[in-house]
Image 1 (cartoon, helix red, strand yellow):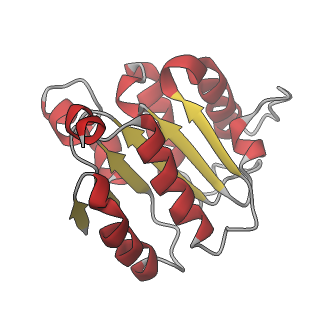
Image 2 (cartoon, helix red, strand yellow):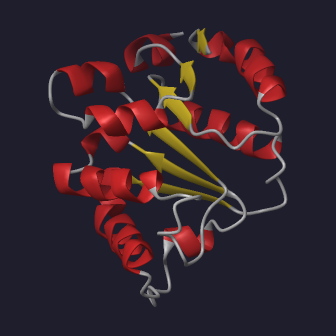
Length: 173
């Protein structure tokens, strides 16, 4: 289930949104600019049953400590009292984690453990988002093949994939 385009992504994305309107599969947005990835993630959010819930965007490089803390607390069933907990803030909506390829290996492993336990295994007892959307300027498949991204995490995240094209090409168009 992959749509490839640069700025013409709206038609394929609309088709994917229609196909997955009632699903909460993870969304992988690759290439394009940060703004394009966020725009598509928001479109999926608006077209889903979670549209009345919050849309929370966090950037892996800037907010890694924040996401790691929230994930660790969720896995340990300890309430994360940080006022800016992205899991709590996105509960019932969409959590958009951009630049996921830049997460440190330790944070990737924590995210993998969290996603393996969400929602059915009973590990997550605190607030949970409804859909995880992730963005990456570089293809995660290539990063996983090169050992820079956890291959098992890539497999979990690669459920609905939208290819936006290269950043340089998208910005030049």
